[in-house]
Length: 236
Image 1 (cartoon, rainbow, N blue to C red):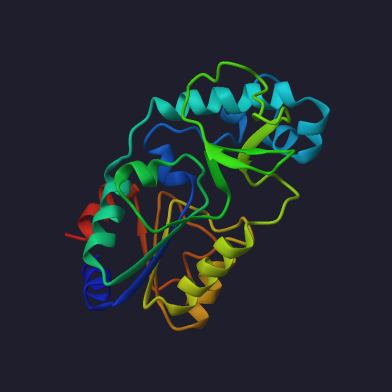
Image 2: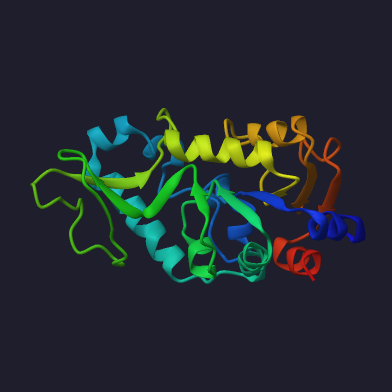
C-alpha cells in the first residue's frame, strides 16, 4: 500500500479502469451467475440487437427494472475516492465498463463509458440521443418524438464500442504513469486489453479486487479487498 501511494503521489498522469465490482459494493447487481438472472433470461439473451428487434418491450422491461435498482443505490467510498483523485491529479482519466452512472454522481468529470450509459436513450429512427432519468419509465417501450422506438444507450453484445470513447481510453492507458484496475477481473475484451497497453507503455499497474484475477501475478501491486475500503487509504 505504501509503495502504491508513493507511485500515485509522484505521478503526473493517472488512469483507472473500473468494472462491476466497485458498483456491486453499492448494491448494484452484477447480472451474471445464478443471482443475476431476471425471470428465466440471462443478460446475453436480452442485451442484443436481435432480442430488441424480436421483443422490444421485454428488453425494456429488463432495463427499466435495472434502472430502478440502480436508482436506489448511492456512490460508495470507492467512487468518491476516484472523484477526489481526479481533483488532485494533474491529468486523470477514468475508464469504466459500468453503465450505472455512479461515477458521475460521485463527482467524477472525465469519465469514458466504454459500454455506454443506462440513463441515455437513443432513437432507432432519427438517431437522436438524450438522457431520461425517470424511474419507472411511463411507457414501455418508449418512443421518440419522431415516432420510432427508443433503445437504451448501452453497448449490446455484438456491437462495436463507441469509437471516439475507445480511442481516448487507449490514449489514456498509453500515457498513464500509474494505471489503476479496480473491481474487474480484466477478462472482458477489448476493455481488458487496456491493462496490457498500460503495462507495455511502462505504467505502474495497481490492481484492487476482492479476488485474484488473471492479471494479479503480472501487475506491479495487487491489493486484495473492497474498493470502498482500499481506495480511500490509497489516496490518503
